Length: 177
Length: 370
Image (cartoon, rainbow over all chains, first blue to last red; front, side, top):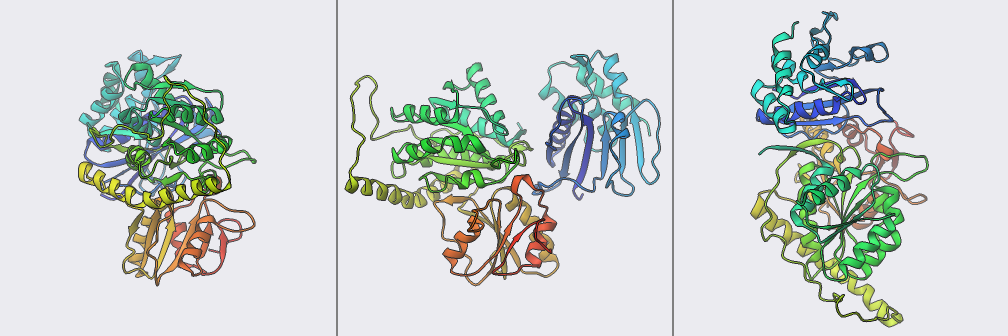
């Protein structure tokens, strides 16, 4: 496998950085190399932000930003009003949307799952915000980016609340293309 | 267990292993996570240090100096303006021959206000008598911090050591981290000129021209001696923990016609550029300079040299380029790039090498034609 590059779109405070961290950790548990980095600009709570994850079979030496991702994850579809989330996405690349509704983009494979709904159902809410970064791992496992076991292991290493694992399992079951 | 950590967390993990008696620090972006994590370790009891939350960086270094002169292990961390604010005291730590260890998260100097990676902050400390190492991965940040204590405290060195990591690019990236149990890798600190707080005495610090000159020479002698101590420490580290380090990290340099020299994360990105150029049939190599002080003898004879400086000395040039030019007695292609966190990709570095103009200076993205 060549380098697999993922860009995660969210808003400041929604847990995009933690999602990147969990995804990279899961890939490491799968026996691969991975790096995760947020792009640090002048962001603040609520502003559109991006995080990057690289997964590879060999150590990763690249620190510059991902320009042509293989996949984009959109944790908050409202950023699509102000950010071109498909920018640079490779032809035939994957899109994962946090949405209850199906959406198509010509030339890309799009999947969707209602992460917000799952988080609310599992009562995964902190300071009034639904937690998206643990359920999204279930969807990423369904898409074959990481294994289910590694996803669960990574979540349990970071969070003691088992509802996070349940939410990831729900996202795995409910994700559809 | 396989772990993932940021560069900042890796430094804090190393400090936890080493258990300094005193940590005195003041938070500053992008170093903050180091001192937050250390404070958490102290609060949870995992780190049995006296943590002194000082009111400034000048005080942080002064507190480390005060603690160190009693013969105990000390640590601090800073960045950018915090490092510059310490400047008087960094000179003092070296002059008083105190093995303080500091992590500096490299960040540009304002104005204009900027929080991103640049080496100018640490470069402005290069003549103070501190040893300086620049790292390129989260693992190396951890390993170099461990080794820094052993090197600084070695009685043939007894000089402070600064571990430099690129702001955000390395301080905030998450990479795999393998932590170790150091065992007796770092012997207990023994400071031959320690004072005894239980037996207070007054010392006159004045040194006349003759003595002062000798003290200066003594710093330089120890700096030269540190070369073999660094080498022995890195060898011992490799034997015990399996990870090898040296004064430089050389990548495809042996048969290279042209070598790009850089420091920090750019040195890793440069290796990807070399992979591309080698496929094109260009015999290029990358030399990542790890130790800036003591400045090593670089093996670059007969090669064309491209130097990337993430710093600048106004009215003079790229500090690394000028140093290498003087040492090698040959012209180089001096590239000034990555200031203030400017994005520099492996493709850009490949272009610097392809379109090199030996004897010239290029400000990437400003006056370049590459």
